[in-house]
Amino acid sequence: MENKKIKLIFDGRILISYLYKNKNRSGIFFVAWNLLREFAKNTNLDITIFYEYQMFNEMQQLKELGIIPKNCSFIDLKDMAIPFISNYINLLFDLKQKFPKGDKKDNILKKILRYIAARSFRLYYKYAMYLSEFGNLTDYDVFFSPCNAIHPAIKKNKHVKTYLLVHDIIPIKLKDFYKGYEYQIKGMKDIIKSINPSDKYFTVSKNTKADILEHNKALRDENFVVTYLGTNENFHRETDLNKLNATKVKYNIPESKKYVFCLCTLEPRKNLLFAINNFADFVQKNNIDDLVFVLGGASWETFKDIENIKNCSKYFIKTGYIEDEDISALYSGAEMFVYPSLYEGFGLPVLEAMQCGCPVITSNVSSLPEVIGDAGIQINPKSNEEMLSAYDKMYFDKDFRQSCIDKGLKRAKIFSWNKCAYIMYKTFCEDLRSEASV
Image 1 (cartoon, rainbow, N blue to C red):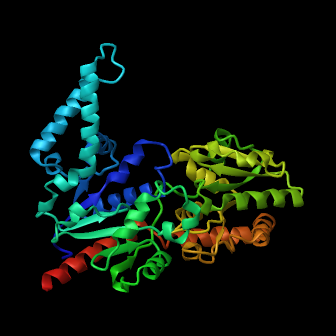
Image 2 (cartoon, rainbow, N blue to C red; image 1 turned 180 degrees about the horizontal axis):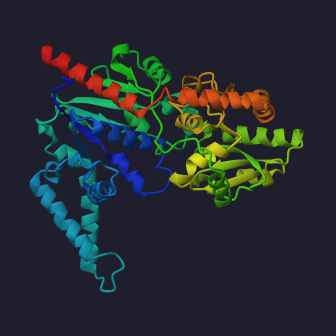
Image 3 (cartoon, helix red, strand yellow; image 1 turned 120 degrees about the horizontal axis):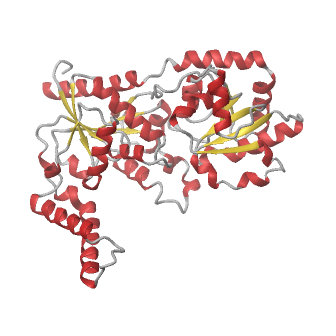
């Protein structure tokens, strides 16, 4: 099969996150984007992008911006719905455009048309694929999803082999953290429910694979292939002092201060209050006045808890959204990167930090030991004593810190998107060959 072109449908729905600088443009988006770029380099893959009807304009934008490679095509709109339904939806879309809400010439007729259009759109988006022509994807071999559960309508095509990349099973492992937030993790729950012994799955770590096997006893080892992730090519060790200082200025980090860096969301499992409280204790205990804690990411703008932490608010800086071109400099300029997460499917920020030459303190649980190895400090994420000791070691022991930098740079080379995508491609080939021989 490696010499024959494989016709691959790539679920590209997550890619529209590129257009919006918010929390959705997170690690999972970058995983999908980098895998697509690697797949597109493979001349033995013929790639078609799958998306939802309402994403048509955004998909065209992504193609123009080069986020979707030029050699990738799109699922035809005509294949997304039975023709007369598709024509009806197009008519409603035109009406919606002609009679926008808030129009000065608004009247009851226009309001009724808008209401009908809105209701029809909602029903269409909910049931479109069940009404679609996706039951006849005779030209394709493989459907791959980098994060979304495989839709039942796609699975109607028994000849198309489906593959899903599973990042973690957070709703099972940390369900107490998400009480009241079921909507936010619905997608993850859908994925877990959809996992079955008939299909093949990729997992981003051995730990995630073990978690799934423990959760679902019907599954077998051969249902899974572990594919470690890589980092974006823009992550590199920045050594230009002018760039490092300019980046500090841009994000309001005092030029005279060293800094601890943290880049993640506010999810409870990220355990950041633990890191912050211990940092406050560390600087007070040692009378340190040349070190600040930099909280990276847009979500920190609404994080008020640190304002009153042990009267140490002066030690904490919230950057807001970090531009892609600045992230390497922020990692590279930090004294250390702190990531005491309680659970990770993989832990991309740890790998990013190592690739930028930033020494790392992270947890000794879930998949994180698989990523960091011996290239940094692993701690019990519930032990204040271990967290304080790690701060102390990384701040005061310069030789140890340099050793972590050197080991991290070396270890980061083990992981690559090219290797990740090739393992997936090889799996496609082997499975299709095996099926053809039966």
